[in-house]
Length: 199
Ligand SMILES: [Zn+2]
Image (cartoon, rainbow, N blue to C red; front, side, top):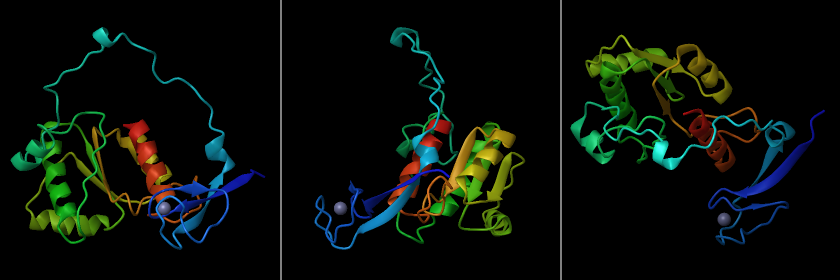
């Protein structure tokens, strides 16, 4: 049986402690410390080097190579488009059409690039289709899947090998390495770190 370790994480500032406290000593908020179980398998992952050191002067980099979203204003905000290998967080209040914007950007990026995978934890594939029809989006390289488990998402990624992955949203995604609820600081942090490594 794997040994599990638990920590108390402040849902307001991310402060972690081994024992429960009524008030977070870091940010001063009350009742924000939530127990999070970290299973032994996350603590004991084998370390293998995935890349070797390179001379900085020999690192190849093409500053012009970016994925255009085909939305001028979006590209401008991103400094000219999406840099391959990067992770971008699109934030905003609920209901301001982040999903709509991302769906439009997906279609734009799929136009000139390889397969693109749109993972939605908020809507079903048919709901996304309905939205795409409303926006008059058609693409033969845009794949959609309704999924929230990171391990399942990783399987879709290794099968499809998309050039761009859209995850809608980080709040609904979870890894089964952690027992805490989706949207908790521990889950958001872990899923983001895993996706960053993957990208
Ligand atoms: Zn705090």
